[in-house]
Length: 201
Length: 65
Image 1: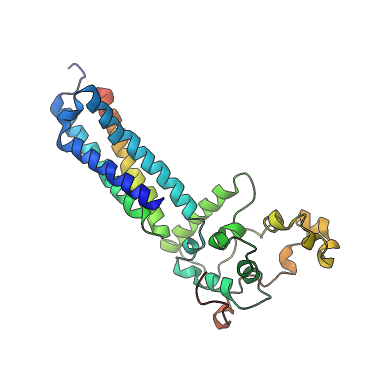
Image 2: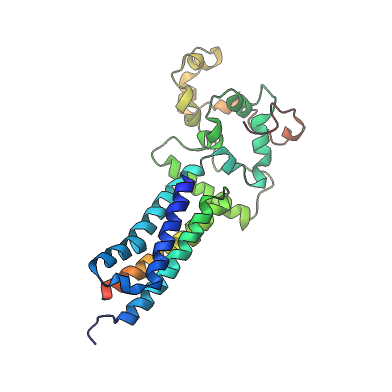
């Protein structure tokens, strides 16, 4: 989509420059229509499609990991550690690898994606203008809803002895999934861990 | 004053809005090929801002003719 959008933007620029250089072509009805396309429809189309492209792109793993501060979090996806929750999910394809961060860090609610994007803007602001905290923490406690979006009603989840004893507590959030699955990103120790692969697949 | 813009006025308004739209689209085009959160900021604040200003100024110009 990016090359097509770039070509569309260049076509729009050329059309705008043509009209600016020869404004007399806009005097006829055909010319007015061309001006409307060049000055309104094409820029609107490029901007609208561009916004969609940027929003979709911001869900990608490499987008999240493109900031230096996220480097250990990216490394944690590749850690050769069976205890690591994120590594197990990423390496075994339990989440889409190209949208690994977004899959677990969006909220599965009506405006969850929008909220995730707004939080993303806040992250960018903090990264460039604010002060990055020494220890990065979630804004709020991790909600079981995000885990159960995929795991709820699956056989392996419900028949697991530990889960079966407290399905209601897990569903209500009274018991956090992270109480047992406590090794998540483990960024404090990830630097010394052996890696499954050197780079993201 | 008839309220109608003269041809030279219209041409200068088209030049002004065209310059903003072209600059905004150029910024957007660059942001499409650069994969980084900064490219989103460039797109959202500079690109969209310039295009929006240019489009509004164009619509204002044709509304006055």
